[in-house]
Image (cartoon, rainbow, N blue to C red; front, side, top):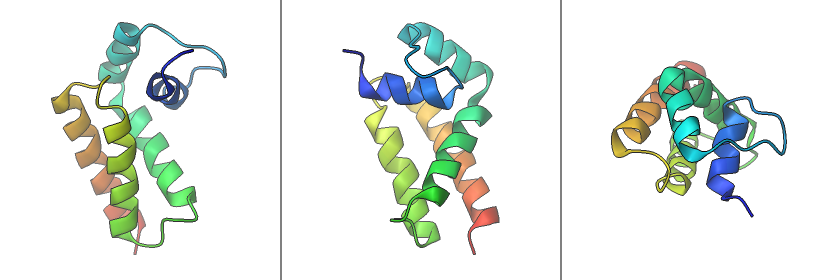
Length: 93
């Protein structure tokens, strides 16, 4: 059974349901277009019933990224978190 974090990342990158590329391919595609994952994570946070504030949205994003920690290099996780934080601060009152 594929890793849930890899499936989530694959979905955020726009892969069809059930498709799962090899981890190096996922990471390469993420490096080429990190904004796709940032936008997906921000959309998920804003759609969550549990997210009622900016702090909750940031925690949501950080939790999802920690679930992907085994897949993502630290610098890439940090870059995604920073970009997501900027987007959330623009969109959440």
